Amino acid sequence: MTGLAWLLPGAPLLAALIGFFLPPAARRPAALVGSLGALIALGCAVALLLRDPVAAHVKLASFGALDVTLGVSVTAIAAVVAVAVGVVALAVQVYSAAYLHDDTNYAPYAAQISLFTAAMLTVVVADDLLVLLVGWEVMGACSYLLIAHDRSLPEAPAAAVKAFLVTRVGDVGFLLGIAVLAVNAKTLDIGKVLAHHYSPGVLTAATLLLLAGVFGKSAQFPFHSWLPDAMAGPTPISALIHAATMVAAGVYVVARLYPLFGASHTAMAVLAVAAAITMLWGACCAMAATDIKKVLAWSTVSQLGYMTGALAAGSPPAALFHLLSHAGFKALLFLCAGAVIHATGSNRIDDAGGLRTRMPVTFWTMTIGLAALVGLPPVSGFWSKENVLVQAEHAEGWQGRLIFIAGMVTVALTAWYSTRLWLRTFFGHYRGEAAKPHDPPALMRGPLLVLAVPAALFGLLALGNWLGHRLGGDLLDLNKMTLVALFLTGIGAVAASAGASHSDPARFLGPLRPLFANAFYFDTVQDYVVVKPVRALARAIGFLDARVVDGAVEGTGTGSNRIGALVNRLNAPGLPRYATAALAGVLLIAVAALATEVLR
Figure 1 (tube, rainbow, N blue to C red):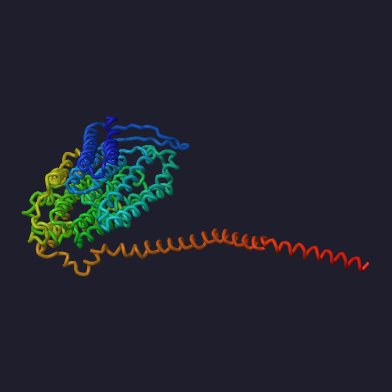
Figure 2 (tube, one colour):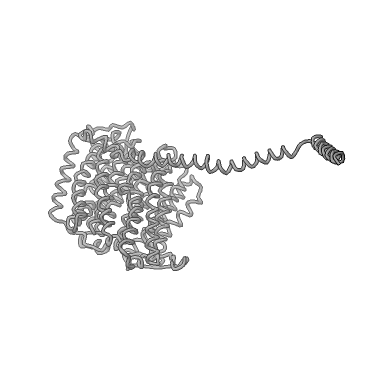
């Protein structure tokens, strides 16, 4: 079992190393190596899930009193999350082989997916904060490369840079938070860090710093704007980032370090406010989005708000349950969106329509995914989302009430934009230009059918509390508020269905439509408040450096050269002038001597 624990992140890491040495255009070998690495990791995760927790450590180095260890700790929670990561990574590797069949740079792409998978699994099983940080940062670097993979799209490099910079800002806080914990606990071992007693001030500072990194990775307000722009990357990468890997990492880390966060009232308050804003913000923006991937991206932002909301309400098991449920149905939805885009040649919802009979496999699998997103019984999203709402209702303090109210409103909004997407894509008449849209080839169709199973049935694992036992809590605690949530779901679905197959129900949003479509003009405000001042400061510093600092240094040298040249001119006359001066001097001396003798 210890060997399997090391192999869990090791297999995709080895696949990445092999992939980087393959010729760039070697699609089949690269796809095979990448898929094999993900499959081995998935097999290890399943085997570890069925066994007792496993831990192993290897000391790497010592820095004074701090020991850095390369350690793995595969608990029941880690194993369940690792299974979700393995399933999504394998589906993305297989799907990509067909989706990017003409890509001449496929081998680095597949290798980057493997490295991304290895990094996420490192975060999941790391037993040392420094090793966790390494996996955390490698994910960020891989996300930059994968989002910018298609350099022919003008928006891809900009989106990659934005994702990298926004998450890096948060990661500065994350690094400082780890430093604060390590300095006070005198260790980087996660178990010892959790067991150490901290003063209230140190605990608040450390948890708030860590939350900065969590908000960046998990796209929480105000670090959320990078996630919809990341849709410039290939659709399989959207599925990978939005499902069980990068955006889930922040939620998982908070759950892993929850004893620290739960002991800080300030951190929990910040988490609750950010979660409420995030879930409502994402849902509103999804209502007016016209790009099928942007709708799903904003829905991811909203659903991440549910996860952090569950954490703020004091229920890490509910947060992890929704994380796992979301991983299945959101990966399915993005891959279904990729099938629609592949068939119609367009990301726009207005270029779809009438695909129900033309793409039956895509229709039924995406229907399951959207039902899970909405939270219709008995699919997975119903169990996990309702569990979050119930936990928020039972939570003590204003944080629980805030999450509950925001979550209930978001239920109706989610039903609205999901119904709109479903009807506008699959019903009515076909509005696109592609001649004959059809279901994708087998390599793309297979992952849809596989992911449809957990999207439909995963929530049933809560029955009998099998999953709850592994996540550390009771996950089957539905009550009368569940009926209220279903009633709100129905209201949202009915409101969106009025003529949706023939015209966009977003027209009913009125003056709110441009506000939602432009994400409350957050990027515009950020541009004026942050981007332009920073660029102005950079130009000022550049001018100061070039004209003042460099000018002073260069001016000193130039001045010295000029003074030297002047002295050189004064001291370097021609030979006749030297002779004339010497003779004049002799003559003056002679005249002076003669005058002296005469005067005597």
